[in-house]
Image (tube, rainbow, N blue to C red; front, side, top):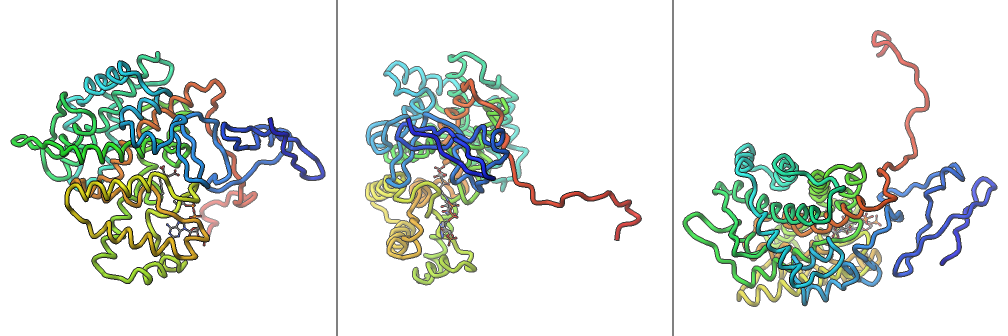
Length: 429
Ligand code: SDX
């Protein structure tokens, strides 16, 4: 146990308990600070604030370590699958062969959406952003099947998790089909999770798409590497909505909205736009990097930097290696991958990036893999959401099972006008 933190304020001294995590990381528990010292803390962006105690995922940003329920992500990448890892994150343990078989069959049994939901897609304009459709349709799912509130039995939770994981994939593929003016494709029960998604994306009524196993393996790895990342912006959003006891569907739909931002899950698409522009314009990399470093330059090296990782994002290294494997297997090259590698090299030698500990993050290379299998850029963040869903479900459940959970309601420091008298409109100028 670590001794208390001592706060001296206004001539008074206060002892604040210190909470220590599994890896000896320490946090000052300020839950009684305002009551005892009449003061709150302020931490814009929550860079120094722990929102909860969680036993799902651990990140050591200084050493570039990521563990799902104690398992190194590199080990899971080499030996596990997206669905097995999803089971681990959601239920806390690696499944037995029977448990995995049951979970996979629950995914298969719940792969289709209500026929009436097909008509919802007709209500969206052809250029509707797939993330807008995804968030709306996840909420709509809750109108066609029982929503999960968190008080139900463990068996009902397994079903709710399988339903949501299976249907998000069907909705995502349908939103893509809508955007390219093609009919929705029904899932095929004989296909596993990732292959079934690619089937629903690229088959046609008159011609089945049989996904190359190389594509299936690469996409499965990508989904698994996105499966959770502790208190990132979208997961914290899901937890906040869960804290109001809102149902699982709507909490996840809120997570989709938070993920959409270009500083978060939208970065994978922004990386492709950035690399494409560099390839097409031929702008010298040194010139682009100078624009990035120029505060007024407004240019950002998308796919670089991270709030927690101040070393390599282990996912970026695994995805970069998967890019090489995939393109070598296909006997293809991608000028964007070559550009990404050159840009990484130039940036990692530059004092600006070294000083700020800016490294490639999960979004830097992921788009290259998705491009190689024909997934369009506007679907990249949807793919991130499909991958992140197991983590969102796990965190939602952790909030709802926590006996000490309270509604999230942060305080603020007010900086507005102190007191003002009401002025009748005729006297205003
Ligand atoms: C994800 O939180 C998670 O875990 C997220 C995620 C997950 O799995 O859920 O890992 C997924 O969202 C990855 C991040 C994807 N976003 C991007 O790639 C967008 C580009 N990156 C940045 O905008 C930024 O690095 C963030 C948003 C990722 C982190 O922002 P922070 O922690 O608020 O850092 P900051 O903006 O305060 O930057 C610190 C300094 C600043 O310079 P100074 O003011 O000190 O001079 O670093 C600079 C920034 O200008 N900087 C960058 C930069 N990222 C930070 N400069 C140029 N290019 C960048 N990419």
